[in-house]
Image (cartoon, rainbow, N blue to C red; front, side):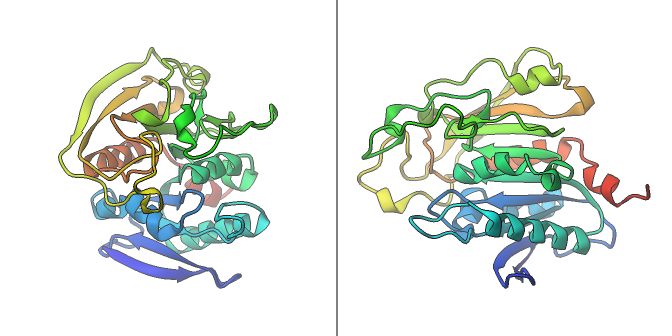
Length: 294
């Protein structure tokens, strides 16, 4: 595996780039742009969703940046971050000529940002899939009151489409995978408007994913004062997998629920592997269409 600190030449901002060190010229790869939770940084995101651990196995290129906004807390917002992310995409597309599929991956506010980016034609025209790591579901979930530790549940404006638990319907042709800790939602809906859009069959449950090893990180800033919904220390666990089969165009639409987990425990190795496998098995092709002759 190769991991390097890449630099956005337009801004001088750095980000981590992970990829197999034995890539052959022209070998097809799947590109993941992985966005961290609000209040965090890219280094934490790499450990929360450690896709780099299976990058060689699944032939991944993974870019993990940090947001520029730091006050009142770190979060993805505004043109400076959006342009930085576009520069990363341009750089990766230029360097790795055969990108078979491009996925946005985002945890919490990083997932909400992924949802927002899909409203920009730059991303809508290039992105083949979105993995929402507790970053909003298309077909919303309800968050428990204990999701907001130490504070009252905030009141969101009625016209705020993307908010914790809820994602707006993107105007883009993409696969969509949602994963969440069991304790950070009241219940998982049994239907999906995204599945309805693609004319799938009824939801189907697949075998559980069992992890005997824990994830790699958790929210140390709230140790001793967290809630089950927010999350505790990493631990082994079991994940339930639900798919909506036979989507038009072969798109992958799935929900993965990590039992007895909250919002901030890092993903375990087997569930990470399973999520990546779903992504690489989903159809791609947008990047190639953009670079093909008219």
